[in-house]
Length: 120
Image 1 (cartoon, rainbow, N blue to C red):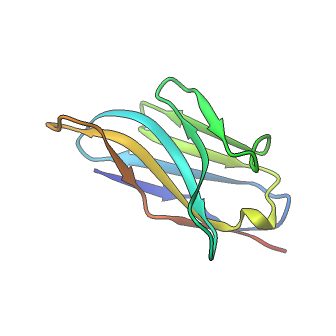
Image 2: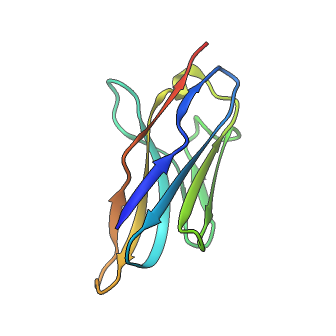
């Protein structure tokens, strides 16, 4: 089981990016999924999360600018980032609460990060 994130890059302030994170492997179930970020010299912080039923939660710093969504059929979570600011620069990580086939409990998995740089 793994999570693969993609979509990072360099964008000018005010621009947009869309991150994707796909879960693959022998997965029997997926509960919550989330995006975190970690800027240089700072702790990893929650950006947004989404429940299996679609309920969302956002960090105050991204409310109104970022939108998290998921496609359960594709086992993928997205993060649409608009009106990007230099302070959004960070490595973005996705996580998912997954149940592997033949497992008896859900476990949190992390994807490798994808770099987002907002700079002119």
